[in-house]
Structures are given as C-alpha cells and as structure tokens.
Amino acid sequence: MPRADLIARLQDALTDPAGPSSDFDLNPEFRPLENRELRPAAVLIAVRHAQRGPEVVLTRRSAHLRHHPGQIAFPGGKVDAGDADAVAAATREAWEEIGLPPSALRQMGTLPAHETTTGFTITPVVAEVTASVEWRPEAGEVDEVFQAPLTHVLDRDRFVIKTRLWRGRRHRYYAVPYGRYYIWGATARILRALAERVA
Image 1 (cartoon, rainbow, N blue to C red):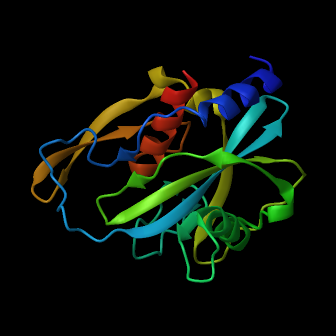
Image 2 (cartoon, one colour):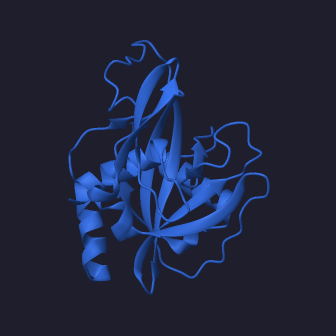
C-alpha cells in the first residue's frame, strides 16, 4: 500500500468511536477492583518514514530496570504534574528517552486509554515523525531504539495469543513478534487495538 494511503488510513482510524482496551480483555475471569485508583500515563506511537515504508518507533527497555526489564515498549511513562496533558507527557518522555524532539512531530490524535494490570491507564498518542532524527537512547532506561514496519504491526494475522502464569493462574495476552523482537503485553495490545481500527 502506498505510504500516503497508509498514513491516511491511520489518521482516519483515530476517529473510530471504538472503546478503550485493557490487559484484562482476554481474561474476563480476572476482574479488576471497582474502586481501584489508576495512575495516568502516556506513550507515543511515532510513525517515521523509510524506504520500505512507514515504520513504528519502539524501544527495548534496559535489562537493569526494576520493572519490565528488557521488554519492548513505546517511548512513554507517567503523566507528571507539570505536563499539560497526555500528549505533552508522551512527547516529553520521547524526548527524554530517545532524543525525539517535539518539533519533529505532527500530532495525529490519540487512542482511547488502555488499562494495565499494574494499575496504569495509558493514553496512546499517535504522531508522524516529519524530520530526520538521530536516536539518543537514555542511558540506564533504554538499551535500543528500533523500527518495525507499520504494515507488520497493523496486520492482525501476525498477532498470536499466548499465556503465562500471573497470580497463580493462566493469563492470556497478545504478542506480535518481529524478527528478534518479542512485542507483547500492553504494547502488543495497544498495537492490536490500532490494527483493529485501521482494518
């Protein structure tokens, strides 16, 4: 599919009224507490252009981190008190984590929030990278920055459902492997939500 057509479909998909997603989607037997307090966070789904077509920017978290070491993730993190909104948080985190300046981004929109089993409500922010950027992984936080083809992560046939033990029970989750990168958990679920909208 031509680059412009795919970007246009991605832009249109952000207006789809479909609801939020959750780590609990595949696990209805796990019921989150009704009075739970969720911490706001935001991630950036940055789409850059390459010869092979549009790509999504992803990171491999440092293997030395206490939480989710070595996992594949979008740039992002908690919404701080100084952030105007989720978009500001996502773009700030992208600058801090991988050196992606806000001036190199064209904001396209957001997806409905995604709730995680760890108590966060994540707003995925979608933006197009409009300038050449040299990645600068934040030492101690990010081991690697890489790109996956947008066509790969928007292809629902590439997603698989896996299981792992969580709190003594089998917990199902989405994964969308790409080469040597195992994209799973909340990152894969957010990409799956985007893929469903584009489809």
